[in-house]
Amino acid sequence: MKNRASMEEWLANMLFSSVATLELPIIDRLYQAIQALDTKAISDLSDRLLSSRETKELRAEEKQRGLALNTLLGRLEIAIDGVALDDYQPNQLLGLCVAAVYWQIDLNELKKGYLWSWAENLVMAGVKLVPLGQTDGQLALINLSDQFAKALEIEQQTEDWMIGSFTPSVSIASSLHETQYTRLFRS
Image 1: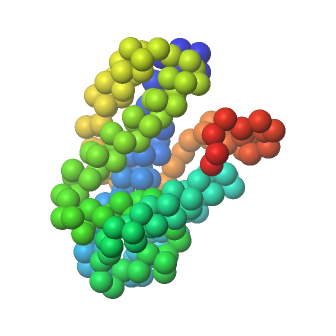
Image 2 (image 1 turned 180 degrees about the horizontal axis):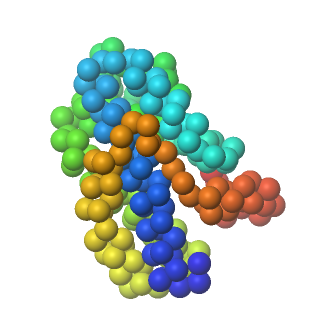
């Protein structure tokens, strides 16, 4: 990535080829499984999410985010009777869904919040790495958020057998990052 336009293109590809087809459908199904106390579905979805992380680094990152959120939820005493987070592969989406069900956050609002959090996090990383100025970062965030409705439409059309991610460039970059000596971010 060399500029705002190339960063926006990269992130839009991730939005439509992974977030809309993997993360959002998993959130949808986890939320419903938690409400139904369907522990088998929760386990299967957690395993599927982790197995969809193509590299060792991406799997470690998912587990680390999940463990951190599980710790936070435990300290806040947020739990759903019948859903013990320690029984599942740690992942961020499960913790988010447990918190959303606990606080009675509407599923669509949860997905919108997840999209905003995802976009803001990656755009702010891009501001530092590309590098971009704050104005270009804000413009990128606005342009990316304008595509959230389309991502939500894609998610609604994603059947169970279609859930997955197709971001080979992200996988290649992650694989190269795993062996890099100097690391800017800890996974």
